[in-house]
Length: 263
Image (cartoon, rainbow, N blue to C red; front, side, top):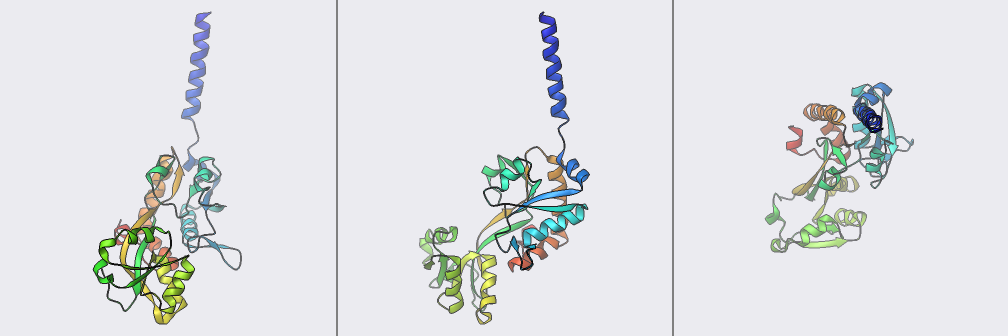
């Protein structure tokens, strides 16, 4: 009785191993289906939004569209939120995340990242005519921030810089302060800095002093190295030829960091 039982267990183990080895490869699946499902938040302008004709637009949207076109695939957007981006790929509701996904060690434990395709730049922006290249140039200048943001925390901790900080409840009131002349500078994303001049062309702002930059990458479920490799090659090509930079500049009003564009 021992031998038949051992034989049955060995056969079961072999069958399980075969199933594990034969697990579908996501890149093959996507190419065979001729469609890629991309999780994108369409409620975070200018990266993802819906236009007046109810069509998705934004920098992440155009990035996904360019990817699908280059791969010869139909594109299906899987609308998501910040909280559901990762679960969408873990449960195979989406093949890929393209949705302002910053690279963090915690996230890298549960999904795989591509190389960065874009960045979220946090800066101090001031009037275009103002000469300010580094922190000492901002001494005595009123810098508007949104209360409780990472920019607020960072500047508050720079007590040795003698910065004059004006706190506002949200980005809208902060921008209003800059537009109306209540603030010389703002500490926020480079994207918002670029929008100030749109509201008041006579008070155009531009990024002056960088605070920090978060890499944004595409996210894939764990265990799909071929898909990640293919995406990395595509990202490298389109950073090199300037297409990803053009998409970013179109919506964010600033170029990608030089070190990223040169990759």
